[in-house]
Amino acid sequence: MLDFKHFRHKHCTLDISNLCSLECPKCMRVQWKDKKKIPGKTMTVEQFKKIINYFKHIDFCGQISDPIFNPNFITFLSMCRDAEKSSTVHTAASQRPLSWYEKAFDTNPKTRWIFGVDGLPEESCMYRIHQDGEKLFEAMKMGAKKGLQIEWQYIVFSYNEDHIQEAYEMAKDNNIQFVINYSGRWKNEQDPYRPRNPEFSA
Image (cartoon, rainbow, N blue to C red; front, side, top):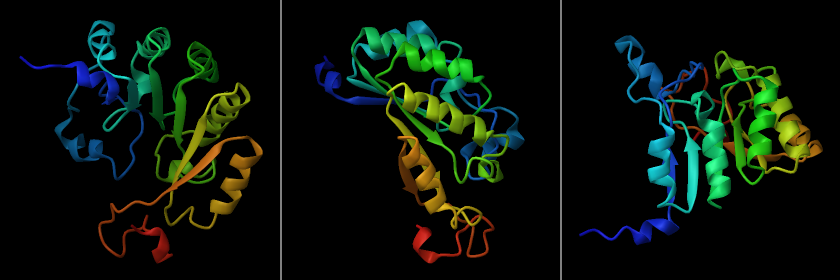
């Protein structure tokens, strides 16, 4: 018989739905677009109950989805809070109103939020297609003002490689942690998203 006790000190990364409004060109969703069906489904509260008992930390990190689209998401945050489990949210979609983010922040102020905004807020939609980066920046500022740990994740592309310092200053001025990521998902040397500076190409 398997002993599951060791899981109580481990992390669990979850895709809690198969929904996302973005069309990021390098995302796995693009590969399945022609098939007209994204694998997976929405996680229920009952399913989440089974998971939260066995892990110390929960990462809500969409690989083919964004966690904000699960209708139970704020309930999941409250369950993490009540069970005294730490949690992290990785998000890039922006289709929720700012009032939704405020409710989520207030539900579990210990949750760490990582926002994928690749470039200055007004230009991030050049890769995060359909993203309202300016709204997400307002959400980041709101969370930081409330004392939450807020991280701005900035993947370097050709269109934003000259704006890193400006974005860093914006983050610093608003008590937001700024993290640069380098991608290696390039088709070839002529990939239009590939940074010109070779130091930014993984």
